[in-house]
Length: 171
Image (cartoon, rainbow, N blue to C red; front, side):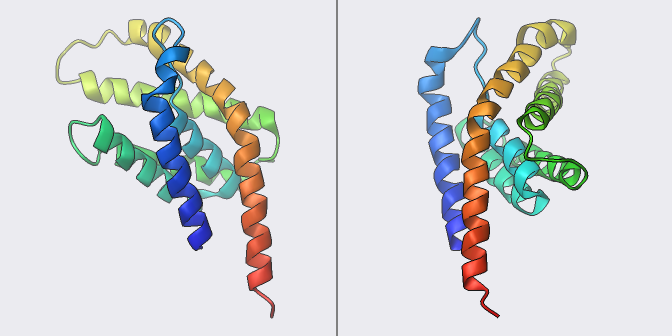
């Protein structure tokens, strides 16, 4: 359990640092991937909602601390994203990379749309179609590429966690 917590803490911090520093240089037309959202989706899809929800909460909390105007908005969205993706975990063959890419696109689209709507609902400037075509859809597609890279990392970590759990339980 401590190894899982350290793993998630380390990678949330690492992905937050990557997202705030190096990803500025790989932006295509001003759109960059959201690595933390992809990490939440892949973790919840492969490991279930019991690991996806806390990973989502703490990844969202780290986003709140870096970018948020109110602490808790991204944490709550990350928690709900981890629960929603983890709930679909039981019904699919999750070790297929195409399934991971498909669900990354769908959930990234929903997450980024919700963030845009909530952030702009009070201003009255709801040009959602423009935001959908210029930001949300390209970012969702970009997130799919990142999901292909994160998928083996989370798969290996999951197998390592399962092997460590089996060694501990010797009854």
